[in-house]
Length: 79
Image 1 (cartoon, rainbow, N blue to C red):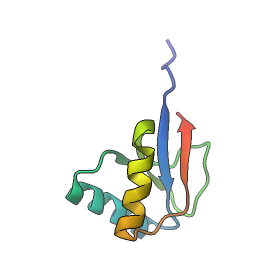
Image 2 (cartoon, helix red, strand yellow):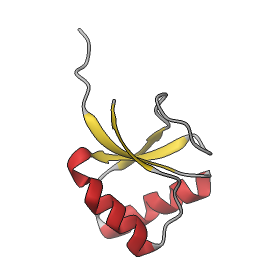
Image 3 (tube, rainbow, N blue to C red):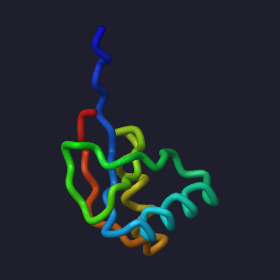
Image 4 (cartoon, rainbow, N blue to C red):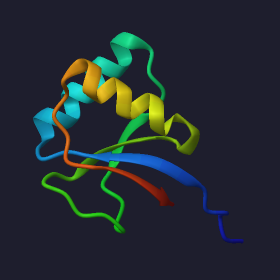
């Protein structure tokens, strides 16, 4: 049986340091989501990304800007 795909907000990073900074900031501030391997549908500077529910998109974007975190892009993708 195939797993049903869901839509997520996925943040990509230029390097592992930026991805780990996002993870630390999110844990410290109780933000939703988690670090995942880069989905095959995306391409970025490092092999890690941050995944959160699609409905958290605006919250994640505002958090990235508020905290001055380094990232490449924020995608909404079906995984």
